[in-house]
Length: 134
Ligand code: HEC
Image 1 (cartoon, rainbow, N blue to C red):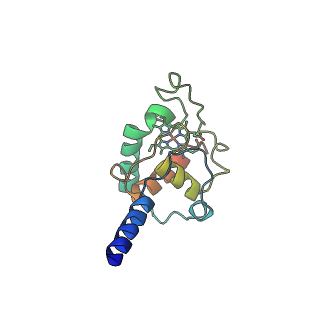
Image 2 (cartoon, helix red, strand yellow):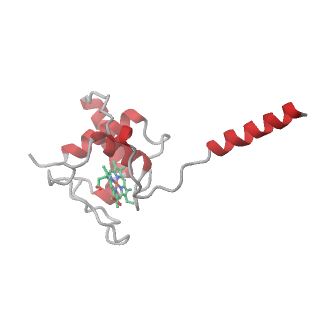
Image 3 (tube, rainbow, N blue to C red):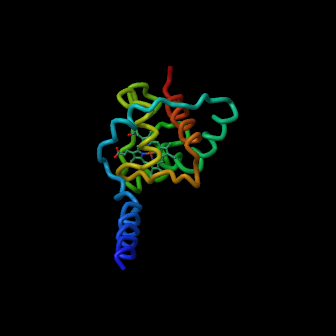
C-alpha cells in the first residue's frame, strides 16, 4: 500500500512538472539562454529554408523584408521594430533572439518545434540579422 502511495505521489509530481510553461509574456530571458552561441553554420540551403519558414510564419507581422510592416500589424495595433535599421537588434544577443522566436513574447506567438527545428530557428536568427542595411 505504501509503495502504491509513493508511486502515485511521484506520478502526480512528475505530471505537474510537465505542465506547459505559463503563457509567454515579456518575462526575463534566462541568463544561460541569452548567453547561448549560435551552434549552426548557415549554408545557402539552410538559409533558404529559414527564409521559407519566415515567409509563412513571420512575414505577416515582421514584413517580407523585416521592416516591421506586415499585413496584420495595423489591425492588431502591434509595435514592430524595423530590422533594416542596424540599431534595432544591436542590444539583443543571438541567444535572446532564439529564445524569443522559440517561446514567443507579448503578442508574438511561439514557433513550435513541429514547425521549425532548433537548427531552423538558429538560421532564422541569422536571417533576421541579415535584414539590416549595411
Ligand atoms: C502576430 C505577429 C508576429 C508574428 C507572427 C511573429 N512575430 Fe516576432 N514579434 C512580434 C512582436 C509584437 C514583437 C515584440 C514583442 C515584445 O517585445 O513585446 C516581436 C519580437 C520579435 C523578436 C525580438 C526583437 C523585437 O523585434 O523585439 C524577434 C527576433 C522576432 N520577433 C522574430 C520573429 C520570427 C523569426 C517570427 C516567425 C517565426 C516571428 N517573429 C513571428 C510579432 C510577431
